[in-house]
Length: 244
Length: 244
DNA sequence: ATGTGTGAATCGGTTCACAGCC
DNA sequence: GGCTGTGAACCGATTCACACAT
Image 1 (tube, chains in turn blue, brown, orange, red):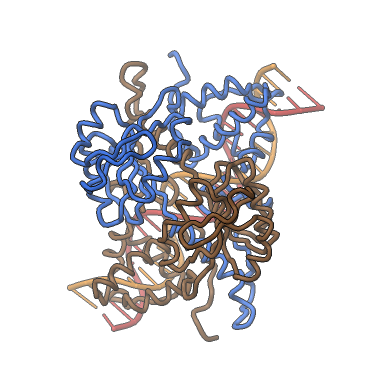
Image 2: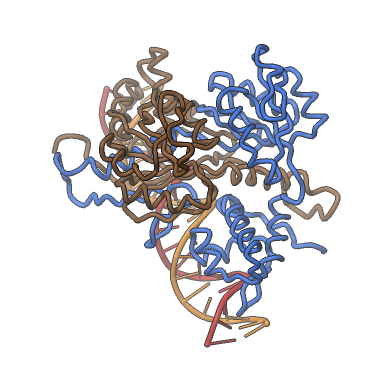
C-alpha cells in the first residue's frame, strides 16, 4: 500500500504529461513554489479542468484552496514519466536526418543519451558524427544489449523502415520513434510514435486551402473558415489556438 | 451546385487523409487501378470502417461491390488536401535543425518548396545552405509577400519561438509548423502544428516505464502492460500497433 | 456475391459544476 | 474565500451492422 497506486492513465492524458512537465521545470527554475491549475493550464496551453483531471490520474497531489507544490509535483511527474533515470537511445540511419539528430544534443540533456548511431551502408560505417562513430547495423543486437538501449529512432528511407523496426524489436528495443514516412507494424508489446513532416505540412495545407479556397467559386453556405488547425491533442474551444 | 460540396470534415479525419494519400500514391505507382477499403485500411494502418467513413466525408467516390478507383480518388484527395499547387515554405532559424530541414529536400518534391531561410543572427546572414542564402529576419515581410510564402517552419530556440510566431502571422503567414519545445499562441485564423521530439521520447518513456516498472514492488492487480503506444491518431484495437 | 455508404450504438475524452478541504 | 478532486453531462470520434448499388 505504499506509493500512489498506479492507475490506468488515458492516452490523451499521457500525451500531455510531458507538456506539464516542461512547464513545471520552468516554474522550478523561476523559483516558483506553488502553482494553480489555472496558471499551469495557461502555460501548457490547455484549460484548467483538463489539468486537474489529468493530474488527478497521478494521485491527489494538490492542496485545496492553495494549488500544487511545484517541487513535489515535479518529482511525482518525473516518476510517472520514467524520467528518474536515463533511457539510452540508438539512431538508425546516418543520413541527413540521422546526423542532424545525432548532432542535435537536446536529447542527452533531457535524459535520452544517444549511445550509438548505426547504418546498413558499409561505406558510412566508421564516420564520426559528433563524438560517435557510425556502427554497422549488424552489430545492433550486441550494441543494444551492452549499452542497455531502450529507444530506437528510425531515420532511414521509408523503404527499409519496416525492416529496421523488426530488427529493433528483435534486439529487445521496443520503444520506437519513426521519422520515416511509412506505416510501421510492431508487436503489441512494443510502443511506437511517429514524426512525419510531410503529413504535418499536408494537414496545414488542408486548412489553408479551406480558408482561402472559397470566395470566387461556390462560396457555399455556412462553411466558415474556422480552420482550427491544432488537431491531435490540442483543440481548445474559444481561446486562441494553442500548440505545444 | 458543381463539385463535391465542401462538407465539414472532422479533425481526426483530416489528420489521416495524408496517410491515405501516400498509400494511394504508392498504389498508383504500382499501377493498381482499384482498391477496397479493406486493403487501403491495411496500408494506412487503420481499420476498414474508418477508411470508408473518412472517405465518405470527401464525397461518394467509391463503387459498391467494387471499391475505389485509385486515380480518381487520388485526384479528389489532392484537391481536398490542397495539393494541386505548391505551398512555398520559409524556415525560420538557421541553426542545426533549420539547416537539416533546408537540406532535407523531401519538402520541395512533395509540393512544399523551401523558398527562404531566415535568421535573426546577423552573423548567419549570407551563409548558403543548399542553394539558399540565409536572409535577415527583418526582411521576412518582404520575402513573404514577394514569394507568396504560405507556411512558416519555426526551428529556433524555445525562448524566441513565440516572438517568431507573431512575426510570421504579422507577415501574413498563418500556417505554422513549430519545432521549438514550447507552447505557442496564435490568433484563431492561423493554424499551428507542433513537432516536439522531447515530448515524443517522454511519451515512449512513460509506456516503457510502465511495462517494466512493475514486478518487484506492488505488482497491483490488473495493470497489464497494454502500453498501446500509438496515441494521437493511432489507436487500433486488437491488431498489432500501427503508426504512420 | 461483393464492398460501399451511413444511421445507430458505443467509447474515450472533455467540460461542467459543485462538494470537500484548506 | 479559494482551489482541488471528481461524478455527471456532454461531445466528437470510432465501430457496428446492414441497406443499397453494382
